[in-house]
Length: 378
Image (tube, rainbow, N blue to C red; front, side):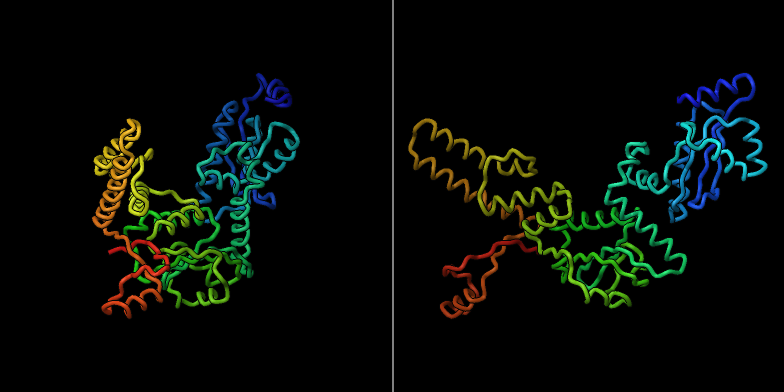
C-alpha cells in the first residue's frame, strides 16, 4: 500500500467505508463498463476477476477492442452512490486519482493475449509483450479488423498453406497461430500413417494483402484453389516448400523448420529406418521394438566379449556382420508390417542401361550411380 493510500484510508477511518472501482475505458475515454467491489482491501483478487471477465466477454464477441481496464482504489460510499446515479462522475474520480498509486491499469488486448496463451496476467508479463513479435502481429491484426469494420480497405498479413488442390488460410488472430501449429502437427503425426495421393508437397505462403476475399475466408478450412481469390497465389512464390513423401529426412526437416514434436510412432519408424540402412547399435533412447531386437543385442554383447577375451577377431567381426544383416532384415519386416517398405529410386539412365543389358525388366544395376533410398507406403 502506497503512502497516498494510507493517508486516504486514515482520513476516511471512522467516517465512511471504502470500495474499489473497476472501469473499462475506450480509447476516447468513454466508459465501456463499470464494476464496484463490495469492500476495499481485496482489490487484487477482485480486479483480476474483473480483468478475466472482461477478456472472456471480448473473446466471446469475437473482437478485442483497444480498451483499458482501470482499478481505482478506496472510493467512498458517497462516490459509489454518485456513480450509480450519473456515470459521468467516473471521469471526475479518475481525474482526481490520476498520478497517485491508488490507480493502475491493464490494456485489454495484452490481457487477452496472455489469457489465451495461458500466461499469468501480471505486470512482468504485460511489460514483456511490448517487444514480443507474436503480440505485435496480433495487435496489427486487431487494428486492421477495426479499419475493415469501418469500411476501409486495409492490408492484412496472412499465412496460406497449399497442399494438393486445396489451400488453407490462417490469420494473426488469437486463434490463428495455434490453429496453424495444430494443422502442421497433425501432418507430422500422420506422416507415415495416412499419406494422401497427389499431396507430395506442402507450400507455405506469407502474404500481406488487401484482398477482402482472402481476408474473409474462414481460417483452417480446406478451400479449393479454384475458389475466387485464390488466383493471387500465382503471383507469389512460397516462402517454404516441404516434401511430404514419407521419408525420414522429409519428416525431420518439417519438424525442425516448424518446431514440431515427434510422437512415439514416428520415433520408432525413424529408428527402424536407420537400423535398416546402417544396422543395429546399442540404443539409449526409448524404442518400442527393443524386445524384438533382444537376440541381436545379445549377439553384439557376445561379440564384445570375444574382443575383450582376445579371441579370434574374425569370430567377433563375423558375429557383428551377421547381427547387422539380421537387424536390417528384421527392421524391414517390422516396417512392412506397418505398411512401410524400403524402396530404391533408380536413376533413369541406370534403369535404361539395365533394360538394354538385361531381360527387359527395370533392375537397379549398380553402375557407378548411387541408388537413392526412401520409403513407400502400401
